[in-house]
Amino acid sequence: MSSSAGETEAALVALLHLIRLMGAELVAGQHRDDVEVLVKAIETKLRAARFPADMPNEDIVRGLDLAQARLRPIFEELRARSEKAHLSDQLLLAPRPSRIH
Image 1 (cartoon, rainbow, N blue to C red):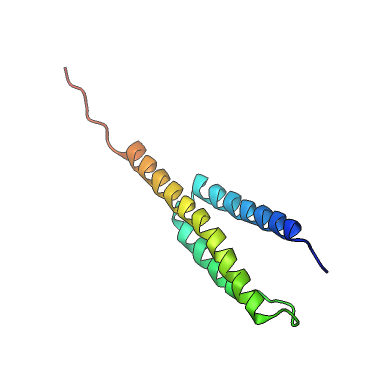
Image 2 (tube, rainbow, N blue to C red):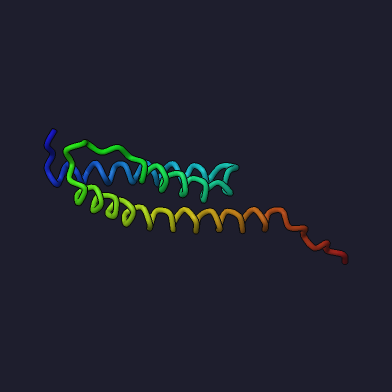
């Protein structure tokens, strides 16, 4: 199966978008603490990916490096969104000062 550089880039963009959406759903839900679990799981599974036997090791190494480089900003964004959500949660749960006149 041969693909053009444009097709490969489109597939990569689509997959990265799905990862971003999965992480955003996690942060938006009740599992904000699981962002690091998701990041570690993705990194681990990425390294465990199976590649065709005839694929040159050099291509695999460069491809994995590219994937990690593309994922890094997504992970940073998810961490920042998670931190912001935690701060928002803390503000909502903080006791409000009573107003006595």
